[in-house]
Amino acid sequence: MSTLLVIGGTGFFGKSILDCFRLGKLEKWGIERVIAMSRNAESLRKEAPLLISSGVELYSGDITTTASLPAADIVIHAAASTDAARYISCPLQEKQNIQAGTYNYCKLAKTFHAKSKILYVSSAAVYGKQPAGIANIPEDYLLSDLSGLSDGKRDYAAAKLDAEEAVKNLGQQGLSVGIARCFAFVGPWLPCNKHVASGNFIKDGLQGRPITVKARKEVYRSYMYADDLVEWLMTIALHASLECPVYNVGSDQVVLMGDLARLIANEFGVDARILDITDSDVDRYIPSIEKVKRELGLTLRHDLISAIRYSVREIEFNNIMIP
Image (cartoon, rainbow, N blue to C red; front, top):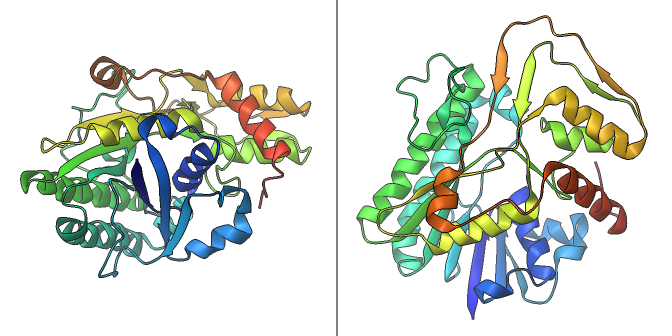
């Protein structure tokens, strides 16, 4: 039986993992104990008491400065702010936080996790803006120049690329590591008060408000359900190696933002308000998942409609607090 350490254990990824653990969905990997680590792990007792099930340990510590880590067989490093507003208002600080959290972890891993399977949660932001000629962006596409991105996106992408290099270097030093480049998601623990469209739309629907898409250009996204996310992260983690494999994590089922709004509005019986397209620019953010399907045999178990319905059902059934 194994111990799983989740660094960033109180965020969306951490909560989704803890939810799967409570429901017995990590048993097939032999996980009998999950350590949720964050700056204030005890906040989970108030925010999400449902997730504090038997076998869960809360561990408060700042990954940017801590001098020690709990032992674990599997480590998922998912500690980074996902608040887009923070990257706009103080991009340099957020960049430094990501780098410090990764560099400090990599230093400590050689002492505390030398025999562990280690997965670093990166972001599809490292690809920059998806080119018009690429329908699904593959793992081997990387920007050579980030200067064309806005300040916040540029600093975030640069920080994630730096972090990936630090993790790959661990592999060169004999540790088993892997990288998950994550796209967009939907699930009951997704923040509903930030920049994530699916979460904001669900919040509006729950509160009986019309769902509005303000973008004046075509925006294409795809959304992976939280349970699929956890299954993919666990599988990729267990395939960590000295070669540090890199995989996209997300859905390749494309949806136009206006259609997403209509789908969620229909679930709640509210109006969807879509502004006319006036900008010829296209915003596309869709992964290729052929590599992970081919090499690890992973598939999407939930389509978009079921992902939305399961998310809403779990929020309502478990009385999950929506800020």
